[in-house]
Length: 276
View 1 (tube, rainbow, N blue to C red):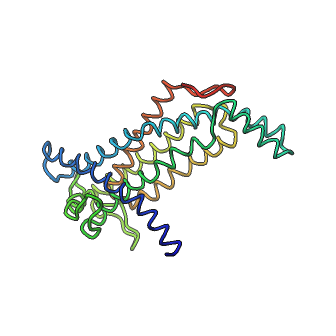
View 2 (cartoon, helix red, strand yellow):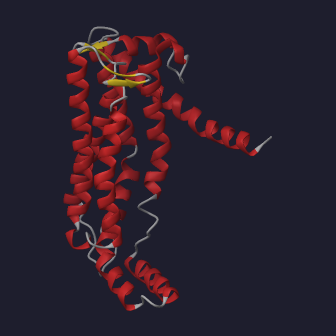
């Protein structure tokens, strides 16, 4: 078995259970909403996507909260990190030693802010793929986890505010914009909201420790601040409406969660340890 086969099997071993988990939650919401709203309607599927996203974000609260706290801890240390960089700019080995000492004294792990994101990414990718495949391919995609071809076609064809859940603002082969004015307006509105919420969620982190904004970590956050909305805007042009609903819900949850954590769990001072 070649290396690519091993990697493929490894990825499949991770993603396949996630596809079943995500589609199971999506269908549970869709089944409940079918009993409340018109079965198979656009509102049923859109609210099922919202419910699925919120449910998984609730399950991910421990990881995401730890990630927010770790980011703030790293930002709080940036002024002292900058001092060490100036003091030992010609002694790389000593600089690394002093940085590790500072992280240990403050109870901060520079990798802790990345770990929650790394653990969340497969789940986030599974959610995106389930909605994207079902909304854009319908029966062509076959079964996706617990989602049958008939379920996928129902999701794709469901009409929401005058547009199908599977409609996109534009396609690239060839490049054409949606013919329906309602689809253009709805998709463009969701793309703007998606990018604006992504921008604001990054600003929340940067503004929480303004004195650290000029450090290396602050510059990294600023880079993400300006590049991520552009990436989302370009990708959003070809995202089905169902995917746009998912991303907007994800970003709104992130904004609310960060605001809560920052208000009720303040970050540590630069000279202290991790806050409670």
